[in-house]
Structures are given as structure tokens and as C-alpha cells.
Length: 155
Image (cartoon, rainbow, N blue to C red):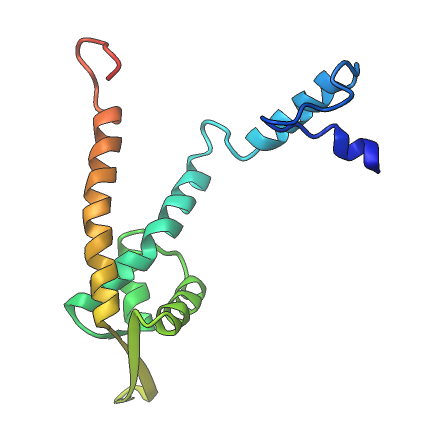
């Protein structure tokens, strides 16, 4: 057990068994494990991660326009391919409430039981405003890298 810990590398501390013939094999395995989820061409996974990173702010943007209930939010986000099911939105809405970014009220519905409507809070508005500025910078940087560069120079 102790020897296993000695094989771990650190930028400051070198392992005692640096000349161990298994070292390069272990290094290769560690690099492979690190790179496992970073495979080119897996766009579905990449899109899933991008969606996961921005959907919270998309919900805040919708709530900044007007209050809404979960099913309504899912419908709008689904139309734009930002969520695929209601199951992803309910935990997010609960977290937004817990963090004080959204508040709720119950309202009677003509089509069934009362509905919980969500409304953005002041903190939610500030979080959204901050994200909008960061998103513009991020988006512009990615777009600049993805654009077809005519002279072939990497910038």
C-alpha cells in the first residue's frame, strides 16, 4: 500500500522508484485515464456538457421576461433543444429556489391542480447579468477560433 502511494507524481516531490520499469506503463495508464472523456468526435457528449453549463442561465433569462411554471419552461427550452425532458428542469428549479435566484408562488389552474410559478429574484437578475457579460466574451472567443481563417495563421 505504501509503495503504491510512492508511485504518484507531483511537480515538487519525485517518486522514490523513478527508475521502476513499470513507471512508464503507469504513466501511460494515468494519461489514458485522464484523457478518457476527452475524445474528439463525441459531439453529443460535448453538447450535453454545454447545455448543462448554460441551461440554468437560460431559465433565468426566461424568468426575467415573465414568471412561468416548470412545464412552460420545459416547452420553451425543448423547442430550442436546450433540454430533453422535464426530469432535468425540476432539480434545477429547486436549486435556483434554494440559492435565492428564483422564488415561487402557487396559482390556481383552469386545467387541473394549482401550479407552482417561478419568478426571478434580484440575486437571480444579478447572476443573469453577470453571465450575459461572461457569455458574450466566451462566445466571441469560441467563434473567433471556429471561423475559417483565410490566411491560415493561428491567432
